[in-house]
Image 1 (cartoon, rainbow, N blue to C red):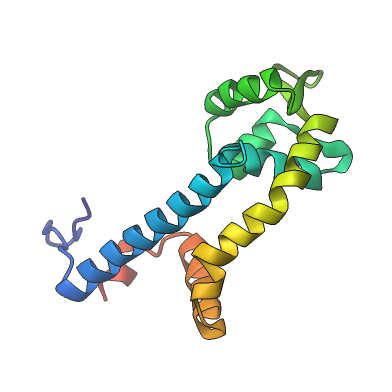
Image 2: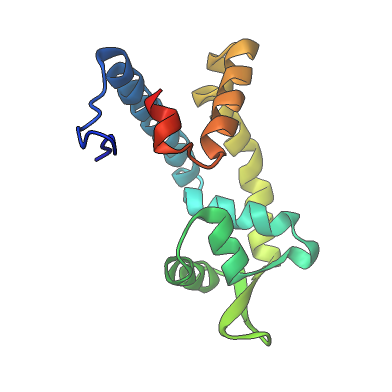
Length: 162
């Protein structure tokens, strides 16, 4: 819970802020649930798709487990468990990282690339259906601007209090 350092008082949300926060949560859940449901219908989870698509963009279709975990915002152990399940399905291979005794490389397999290529058109259509086509060009620009602002390091407490 955020407090104002100078007074120790909780900085409760005003009604406009509360509505904006709850709207953000609703749209995040709705879009993610819709695209996840559509991916599941073709046999992939959202994390599967993210791992596959990211690996497809890397040189040699390879990434270290640590780089991939950082990209996804996951812990290494969580991604390691997920990668093990994907490897069991033939979507990727894990190979030792000679520079990190505890790490490994994740390598996209031919089967994983085929799964991605098969899923990509349906995924793009899902993103369009649940997000892009429901917004105006101005909405999309605003969302991008908001995302950039939220990706910046937080301002000091003093600056936010003004």
